[in-house]
Amino acid sequence: MNRQTKRMMQRDEARKKKQPRPTPKPAGAPGGPGGKGPRTPPRQFFKEVAGELRKVAWPTRQEVIGYSIVVLVSSIVIAAIVFGMDFVFTEAILALFGVDR
Image (cartoon, rainbow, N blue to C red; front, side, top):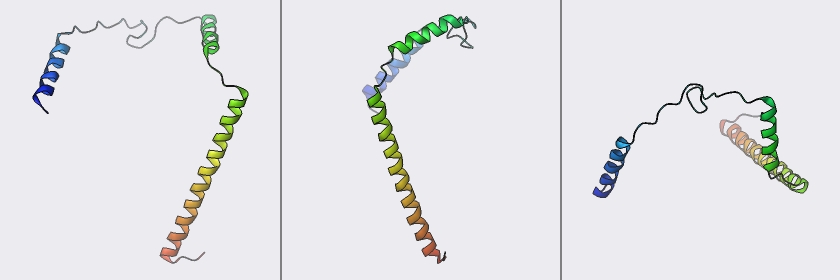
């Protein structure tokens, strides 16, 4: 560690010591200890949920079909690779120890 880095670290530590500590929030306040604030009424909650869902960029049917095919093909290929490696290693171990099936 060079002198410049040490000096920079010392300045950062001094700056952190000078900053006042944040005042703790009351227990019932959002973001305070316990993390609970006043309850939101169910009607308002569902209104906000619907508003957020309207903002979502939903994929088209063709995109969903394309992504699903990619996932299925990938899963099949990976399963085949794992099966092949399992078969090869099993045969190698059995041949190594001279076990007949």
